[in-house]
Length: 164
Image (cartoon, rainbow, N blue to C red):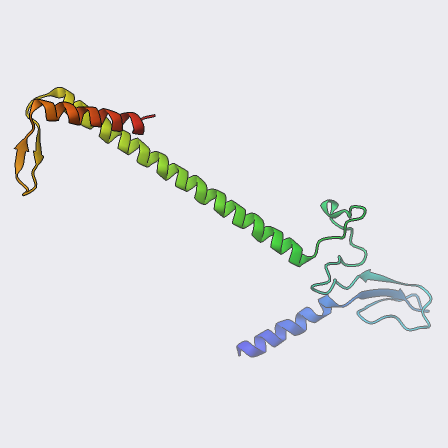
């Protein structure tokens, strides 16, 4: 059934592909046809020109070319393949630019988080109190004042480098 429907659609669309001719016969009767008028007819006109075949890149006869497609002197018009290649190139460049922007945004977000962590660590060392760290066997060890000052200096360096 689908086959018959597609064939029917093709047959109905076929007259749209042909030229349409208008002429007046000897009796003054106006005729419209997809066939050219007989040779005996003196005056006839083509109403609808046949569309350009795909791949030629030409507009139908009688149809004005688009305003932006005006040919430039000394430059050949671009073919559909050239236009497609330019489109793909622009799309690839846009994708690369988007990826670069996304990567830069992620790097900025990571830098912001690292700055915040380093600043919090500096604040924790400056608050004072008893500060612990884990030893080699996994148990907590209390840091003495010299170790706290050394870690505070390291934390300030880290904060300065991340928070520029």
